[in-house]
Length: 369
Image 1 (cartoon, helix red, strand yellow):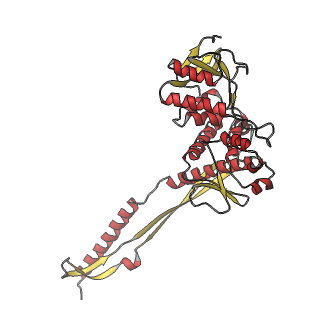
Image 2 (cartoon, rainbow, N blue to C red):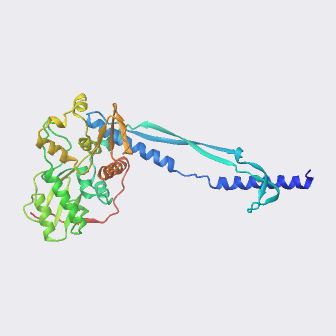
Image 3 (tube, rainbow, N blue to C red):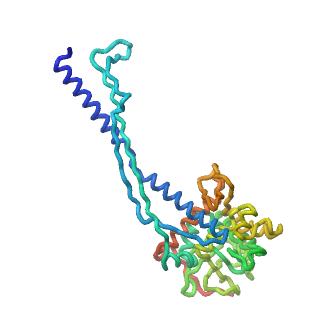
């Protein structure tokens, strides 16, 4: 029979083991925002993709915002039942060690149950942000995001001089419009900027905020001026919302899109079977002639495309189900995923107030003819 001292010693040791394990376990319990972050990011992606698909089928977009996030935290503790052993221990050489051996391994489970409250976005401020064309300052912020400059122009700009990048057609059944000239200009500008031969800056011209396309050599100036059909090469080309459609010297018309128009533009990149589109009453690609299909594909070429399938795709994290069909961006489509990120940045800019720019601003004299 064990004496009282032995019993007390064993019990004290067990308590110390339990206490020590509990302390270590709690210290290693992760408490991060990762779950919330991933859930909200995925929800945002799905909302934008859903509205792009809706617009493809001539349905109205619908947005909801996060009102609040609450959480319930639960801590569960157990001593690990089957892991608790009492008996003789060994000293590592297969020889019995004296005394009782206690192997207590408590389990600690720390869980959170988040509840996210959504509500429909509505009101004057929301509608204004959706339908107001992107202003020069916000466009410039997007242009400085280190994303593709040509993608920013293609996504957000409707017109530069006489080069058009329309997001809608006068006759949606014809698709006769061709935006090749616009794409050529912005691609040339992007290439020249990457080679440090041109840049885009904020400026003031006749008391109005403008964008200035600056060329750093004569060859670059000639390329950009020719792409805009200017009468002669200019080292500085002024892009102004207040210019007329008739080009005057180096001052050309610059018309941006609203966020609604951006989504409508991207909806041309949704790929669906002819019978599905016919069921929604929209013009199918298969009903167009070869040149019309080329013109339509050119709108979002290299920028954005959504595939569709009858079953849930396995190779995509950006996917939604709409009217019994799945629409998605493949994981391998880098350009479309980058465009989706750009759309989210635009939405954030249009939803909030932007203070006066802290970037350097050029003051430009009256342009020469």
